[in-house]
Amino acid sequence: MSPWFRYSLIRLGLFAGTFTLLMVLGIVWWASALFATVISFTVSYIFFAKLRSEVAQDLATRVRNSKNIDDDSAIEDDQIDSEGNRER
Image (cartoon, rainbow, N blue to C red; front, top):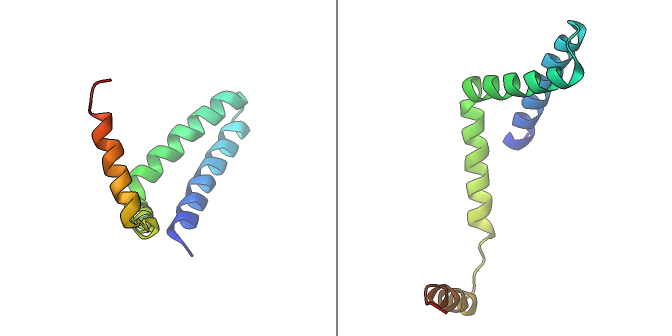
């Protein structure tokens, strides 16, 4: 299972569980959604750092593998970059 999918499921599960608990406690839906968002973000940030770094590594790998740059494109990009630094 990909780290993206696992991390997304964990975050969604944390949100849903927290939101449901807050709704059962009688808190207004928009406040429950807001608190559930903050709580799920905080918990996943603190306790799932390893999984988050796996997702970041997977993203970096995908970006690195998707860069199929030919010589002409690289020359054109360099030319555009150098023209962007000139004053018009």
